Length: 389
Ligand SMILES: NC(=O)c1ccc[n+]([C@@H]2O[C@H](COP(=O)([O-])OP(=O)(O)OC[C@H]3O[C@@H](n4cnc5c(N)ncnc54)[C@H](O)[C@@H]3O)[C@@H](O)[C@H]2O)c1
Ligand SMILES: [Zn+2]
Ligand SMILES: [Zn+2]
Image: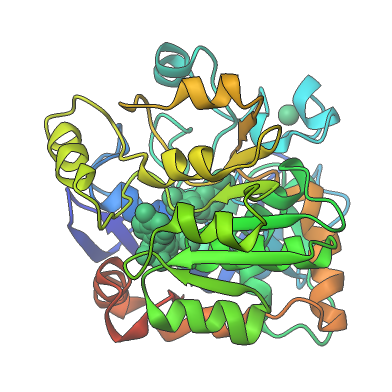
């Protein structure tokens, strides 16, 4: 079958690979019908995620049709149209039982590297390096989905493919930022990044009752989506001082909740950008925490900062003093898909959550290298390319 494989830093190719088979009674085989590229895949592509091997099939945000189930799968059947959670969850461990599905103890067969880097391994993720399990990804005609009863969800009638595909990753990730970031009715929320994840965090904040939601980016097309479709306000960080602007918008206090949806390849219009780039290229830090720093500085005293953007290891010039002295709560997480996906599908069905505008480029799987190029460079107003195998 055809699949998109990582073949080195900044190199993707479409190749023929073996079709997946049921290997465990809890597996399902899913025929992929839509698979989107995520900002996290850009970090893979750029070589910032260790333990990728040439030939690894990437992709983790997708929907499809179940074509085969293992003998222990009881909740899904052949023919079901499903959205699939990127992180794999057993459903039975300490973490899964707490709803912290991406922290599952039983889905990363290669925990050594994450244990050395982070002190413990989170769960495994489809198509996202050997450190996170070495599971083949979704940019393929078929994919094996372990623990299918836990990580697949039937898409309700009336939710189109182009809407449902974002119930896999972008929408639950954004919702998690607002939920675990503690957004309450009346809050002011600032979101860094107007990509699919940032827009979904903004929409979640609005649906959770935030009074004002402000999205920060530099791309006009993305900020326009955030205002016109999501219902947020926008700041272009190249045109103004974000800190001054946010203070102005909040009566001098700062946002109650700050959500970072940018990650380790942040851009900046400020002089510290060169410093961060050099340190990252020399591997003296593994990510550029530009937006995390700004979120921490902007946040009101006693507020909370939630890091949705992916970071791999260690960063420099981290304003720990601000976290401590301002009494901030700082959290982050990989997406706990099963905790949010059923609720998000219902909201999609009711029309409260629209996502199809994020799919700016829908193309055949063969064209994935071009789609990634557009997405990486944000050319042609690309927000997310979506591939049809
Ligand atoms: N926590 C999770 O489970 C999870 C899930 C999905 C994605 N992610 C991560 O979320 C991040 C965003 O993903 P995406 O798909 O929306 O990516 P994206 O590349 O489409 O969007 C990132 C946006 O951040 C903007 N940006 C860059 N520097 C900025 C700055 N200093 N201030 C404000 N905005 C800035 C960019 O212009 C871009 O629009 C990535 O790091 C991705 O890896 C995390
Ligand atoms: Zn993702
Ligand atoms: Zn588990």
